Length: 265
Image (cartoon, rainbow, N blue to C red; front, side):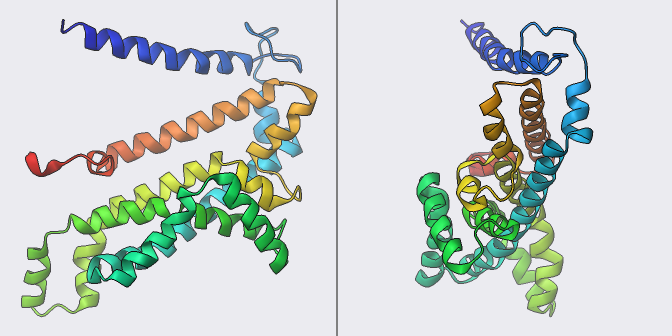
């Protein structure tokens, strides 16, 4: 019965790849209508999305700016909180960490509506920086978790040895703590980046139709039906996700990030 495992995995891979193949082929249509198999295959739709069609290129630029900006801000907010939680373990630090993770646990529509009222009150509704801050607050839980996992994996004997040799807290942080947690910091950054790049609901409320990311532009384009350019956008999402998660699997500690108990190894 050992053949059941490979067969199941093969069928699962096939079921997952078929929709991707259909969307990839639909992006090759020469006209403005999405057909499968594609008619008059061409790469013109890729050129429109990345180079010539201002609606899509602007939306792509907004998505990249929001994704990278919010991911960097999320890491910047999560690092001191994770370090405080790891160093002190106090009830206050745990409470603050729980509050920081709460937006990710809320239904996105609830968080989005709340942010809509919040930014309208402050006068930031419809601004790009409000979208960056909103996504940073929404996805801060991801780097908070990954950085905390990295901090918990540090061998306390290394810290004791550094203290015995007269290293200050700053030197210990720079030479021991930061290098050992760098893969977890990068993993949290890229997790937040991918989710921000694909997020729609919160950005829908925060942008207030003042600007569009790729996800919002796909929604707006649905009024004219399904177009091959939308398929190019979907391929972009898939490609970015595959590249990021492959990098995390290659250079990050993926088993620990997924919750594997490595104490038994």
